[in-house]
Amino acid sequence: MTNANKATPGEPSEAELLLPWYAAGTLDPNEMEEVEAALASDPELASRYEWVRSEFAEETAIGDAAGEPSPADIKTLFAKIDAMPARRSQTASGLSERIAEFLASLSPRTLGWSAMAAALALVLQAAVLGGIAFHEKMPGSYQTASVPQAAPADGSYVLIRFVPQATAEDISTFLEANDLSIVSGPSGGQLYQVRVATKKLPDDELPRVIGRLQKDKVVGFIAAMP
Amino acid sequence: MPTTSDESLIAAIAQGDRPAMEALFARYRIPVFRFLMRMVRNETTAEDLNSDVFLDVWRQAGTFEGRSAVSTWIFSIARYKALNALSRRPTEELDDEKADAIPDQADDPEIALAKKDKAAVLRQCLLKLSAEHREIVNLVYYQHMSIEEIAGIVGIPEATVKTRMFYARKKLSELLTEQGIERGWP
Image 1 (spheres, rainbow over the protein chains, first blue to last red):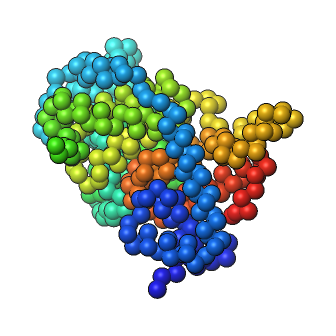
Image 2 (cartoon, rainbow over the protein chains, first blue to last red; image 1 turned 180 degrees about the vertical axis):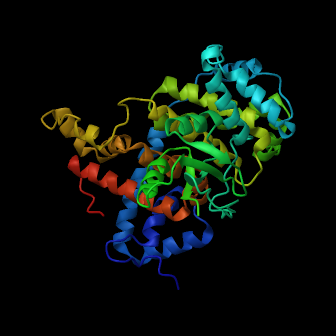
């Protein structure tokens, strides 16, 4: 017997949490059965479900009212695709090719003499970042954080895993904005060793730095290096 | 006639198959556009982002490993692009402070009448939710995504998906109360 409709005072029950998905019809059979049992035995829950149904109806109306993209969108898309460099086999793309593509994407001004040093730094970062792309995520998967090595004695270091959607440009921007540098990686679990300071930070300072960096949209996981 | 699976289309796209790209685009262009519209609330921006999303699908099809549904992958790209677009806006996000600044038109007879129309008020309150709450409400109710799928799109644990939706609904109740509609919950 499940207790899907029993909740800690002040906290929603599991059945209540599942009501939106019940309304949308996206629960698995077991969960659906639990919610139905809870609704049948709890009139209060059943009355709250009526609000869920209203929300479902109005969100559907909002979505439908958003309309459709322009009929010309497919032409626009393929015009952009056709403007891209000739496609190579994505599985065979080597590091040198990715660096070449990255350099090709930089504007002439960026590649000017005065920006050459910055471009070189970016290239080095890109080389380390390697094949970052839109890898899809496996929800709820556990990835072993195989730490490659302990942190060097000088400086302060963290391990970062970037969100799959982050592009190399997003990550470079993040690194530059926070004065960070990638030391190595990715290791198993797509972890990068990142230097956050050139000197050893006080014990209470590093957690604050981690807390700040964690809020950036490119950061999927961050932890201090042992 | 059996429909070609998303996974088959992605595999073909990775080889540069344009008809496969057209088919996938036709399948997802409207739902992704409507998700983007919900997030960025601007038709021109949503159209531009929609194009960018599928351009990235074209570019990155070869990296798709099938560990999640194709739809999860596509929507995670769309979400990321929407959040990027929102972060670049100086004052666009309709946060709590901005919602409070909406003038109280209680004296307007039309508004008073509308207040009796709970559905219309509910719809207005749904529109006022923050981006974080808008996305989950839309993914649950409109995109019909499961808890697992949303966890994959948003990058949070399944338990957090459920509680985030709960707090989105709780915020909705607060907004409704401000408009004179009491749900008596939570």
